[in-house]
Length: 203
Picture 1 (cartoon, rainbow, N blue to C red):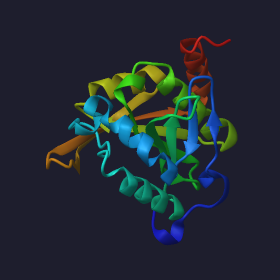
Picture 2 (cartoon, rainbow, N blue to C red; picture 1 turned 120 degrees about the horizontal axis):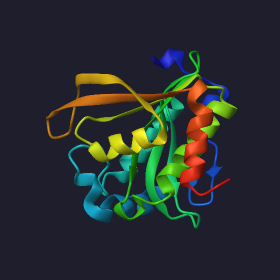
Picture 3 (cartoon, helix red, strand yellow; picture 1 turned 30 degrees about the vertical axis):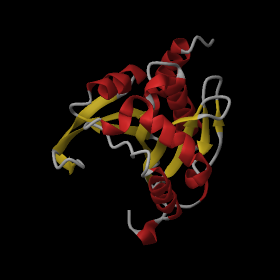
């Protein structure tokens, strides 16, 4: 999407999304210190299969995501605990209002938040906004072929694998990433929502 094709209105609105286990707060400079601590938790920023910003690089990463939001490409959030402690980041990526599609991407969590209810509830909040508020026809997810943890987590949401983009991106260590593409389409949303609510112990 070029600069002159930026989307406007609701798709880019930086909304607060609140659940029982997680708050998705519109990303801002005030999250930098907490996110630096989260990236250092378990040294998640050093994993070669992900693109987690380094603790020192967090302010620049936030500025970059906010600039992409201003250009109409993404909607970034800080993933926070109910008390407001930042534990990661997540984003609507590749926003395509004309085709009613978004990608949930550029997502990471500090080690302590992994394997908890934070990620499934964050995805429930983002998917609910995408399908129920923005009337999306599909939501996409992408991850590194070798990031088996991420692939399992995406599949556990109920997303289906669409395919693999081979040698799709160059990683910061110079290696080439094969990108696995998943999606959830509108007709699957009710079943996906039921599965996520069951995982979270909701009615």
